[in-house]
Every structure is written in C-alpha cells, then in structure tokens.
Length: 401
Image (cartoon, rainbow, N blue to C red):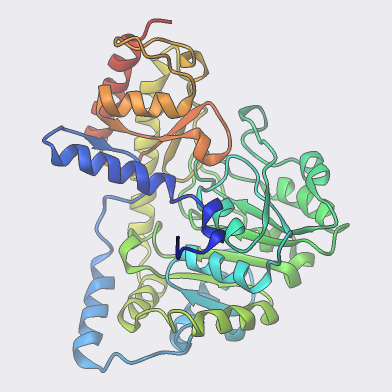
C-alpha cells in the first residue's frame, strides 16, 4: 500500500539536481569531482545587497508581507521593466515568488486543466515538462535542432498548436542552449500566435542580462505588445545578481492571472521572506556595475569552453549566445566502447562515463528533450573549466569507436 498521490508517478526529480547530488556523493568518497551540473554563479552577490538586507533585518521587524510582494519591491520591478525593457506595468500586474520556478508553478496551477497542452520547444529547461504533468498538462515538445539555432520557428510553432494548446513557453537566453531570439524572430512567432487566441505565452527571461558578442536582449513583451493580455514575463535576481539562494523571482502579466497566482501563493507559502525581498529591491534599484562584470566573466568562460571543445573532434558545440551553459553534441560517441567494454548507447551513458572516468558531472541531453547532447555549466572559474575540458578530452580519447 502506498500513500503517495498517483500524479507523482509521472513526474521525475530535477535532472540537474540529481547529477549534482551524484557528484557530491562521489566527492564525499574522496574523488576529485568537478561538478558542472548546476547553473549557479560562483560570484558573491553584490555587497550592497547583503548589507542593506542585513541592516534592515536588524533594524526592523521582519513580518509577513503581501502575498505577491511588498509594495516597494513591486514598484522596483515595475521600474526595472520600464527602464530596461520599455514596458509599463502597475503593481497589481506584478507577482513576486520564491524564485522563477515558483512563479511558473503558480501560473500553471492557476491555469492548467487536465489534458491542456503546453508547447515546450526542445531543448527546454528540465522542470517545464514535469511541472506541466503535475497539473495534468500534456507537454508538446517540438524539436528545435542546432540547424535552427535551437530556436523555435514560426512553421514549427504553427504545426504544434491544437485547440487544446494552453501555453507556449519561450526561454531566452535558453537553458541549456544559450539561444537568443532577435526582435524579428519574436515578431514572426507573434504573428502565428495572433491567429490562436487560446494560447498564452510564458516568456522566461531569467538570463536576460547574460548575452554575448554584443547582442541586444529583446523582451517578448516589447516585441509583441499586441499579446500583452496573454503574456507572462518571468524573471528574477538569481542569475544576473548571483543571488540563487535568496530565492526571489518575479513576473509581469495580466491582472486576472496575477490575481489567480496570488490565491495560489497565499495558500502555499504565503509570501517570500521579507529580508530576501528587501535584498531583491536593493539589487534592482542599486548600482548595476557588477551585473556587467559578471556578464563579461561569463563570456570569457564561454570562449574558453568553446575553444577547448573545438579541439575534441568527436564533440560539437555551437557557441552559446547567452546564459552560462554549453550544450555539447556527442552523436559521434554513441555506440563507442569504453575501456571496460561498455557500449555508450545514449547520452545518459555518455554523462555517466564522464562522471565515472573524467570525474566531470554533466547533465545528459535527454533531460532537455533533445539528444544526443550533454550540458555543462560554465558558471565556475576558468581554472575549473580548463581542467574539466582537459578531463573530458582525455576520457573521450580512451573510447574505442
């Protein structure tokens, strides 16, 4: 007899968290593991952020806040959208939650009914399909291969839409691919969506400030203002400000959706912790110099990894346009024999081989819906990344193809 709800039988734990946990367990045995499973900046949060949060926590009672955020933080979010994206929102169109993932979770709980379809262009963030399935949703995962820049095209979008389509998810820059959409590419997708009024759009822009090669970031909301009444723009302070553990995400969207998300949040966690909200406000309102210095460091790391993988002729890597990941093609390794005689049948086996032999933790492309690839995070030091690429090269050289 089990007491676990049947809906959990179709939901998998986070693949990136599972890989990181396996790396930690191996490291606990004394093995020198380089964990590139989680996307977590190795920088400290800006000093003024922590100082303001600590000072206010000492000086003031930190009480419950409004479910969807303090008025001050929501004003700061509105100003951020106006200043950086050219978008005008009011406080009742803003939601604040415990990270961008909870924003998405709340939105789906508020809108998805059994059998509703969600278009998740692959490769997608690992949590998207699992969240959809939790609420009885049906993930629809059209492939967006390297040949299309890992981007959704209007033709593929049109073919994926049915009368049951409830949401389209966009992630830009993408995790794991690093793909960035131009204004013209977003407008072309918007033209398709104009013809399908039942489809809502979730634009996950958490890596907004991490773009490379001089690219300008364009929010979906700015490119397709005619779709404002069915667009939810998701963001947060975790990536741009190296504040993953503070757990503050935010979103802007139509009032009726934001109100429904408030109901969900009020009956789950109540609100984000008050000190964390003050820290997020400080990040959005304070100096932005470190955001730029972080971006420059991530670009140098991207370049290092791209050059290193280029030297391994059995692996492929299109230079990521943003975020801090490398989605590495390993098709040439499928079918190869390891020194112990094991056949690498898929990218799950490739990732396991890299962990066992190279002591480098990577996430298989299967978790992102597009194989055969593996993803490594480039959010760690250049020294660590150089060593990781060297280990990968040595491990690949040992295979019998």
